[in-house]
Length: 285
Length: 158
Image 1: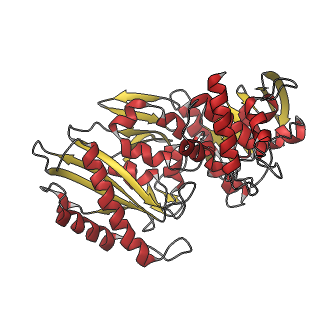
Image 2: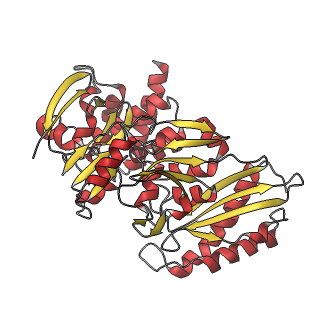
Image 3: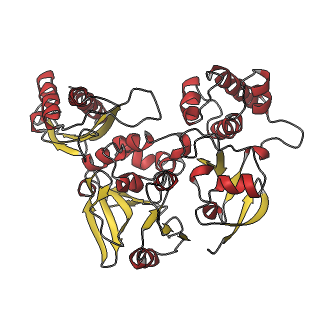
């Protein structure tokens, strides 16, 4: 195996695209180094992207924030601006692994690992986050929601890698939240999860709602949350949301939870996350 | 295979080594630099026994390639005591008998030191969450948390 630490995006793309064998991007390494250790991947080339200018930066842009692909969870959590604008995204990222893992793990890596249970992915998708991708044909932008295609698989092409993730601006009276169920209190993989991003009008009625589920399907799942629109998130609206989530979920049975339990609990998580987002938006019902 | 030449800083001292591309920082610390405080428990970032700091950031050295440490500042448990004078955290771990087999202890010390540098006055809940990535199969954690909270109080007073 070769290890390379290019200084520019262009050099990284050339290395990744030019490798005849298996090439992997190394950012935080908390997935790829574990997979190498377990024999799940055997890269011929690891391209460390942490020495590329700007990939460790968080930059304000168009009322939102552009987060470099090599920014660790700990660095993101310490950034006051992102946590104020998208608290649900930051709380989701901070749930990934231990303090040690947070010191290295990245949001872009969590996305590219394409685990159905990745914590940051539903939250990013609910936020309408956009990944900027560099590749042999230049740069393109792609909705985060369109990156994972199946467990462990992404829509990234040969030689492509994510250089940053853009979290857009959001209007007044809007916020987001992420909740997951795990049997422990820390250091575990989501059995089911829900990310909710809501906007409210001046009368406190919900005017836009995005609800994304994690760990209850092969990829994240988008729930039709129209039942919340025009409401103040009264009990009937929340029950309808829970029912919509349970109906959308297509989970598996495994050692971490049964499909029946996952379908049920994901609705409860969505209801609770919606109430948290409403409170964060400064709306009283 | 070409070895990679790495120049780095470990506990404030300049260090050079040659490593294989897939070798971890933990491997090099233990096998080449003979800094055997960091332990390989799981090798997959779950147990925290290999905890070190990289540019002040707490990480598992089993999940860092030795090649990645080039130009960075590594700090290990060996750098915590000042010569023969133990750090307050080390004294408190001994005083509260917060170890039995001792395999997790170096990682606990590195992680707890990082905690107290960032949060000098943590709540017990904060300390428990911060140390959730440091597994201990002997103590049941209570003695460790007591020692860390006691050390924090003494360090604030000192």
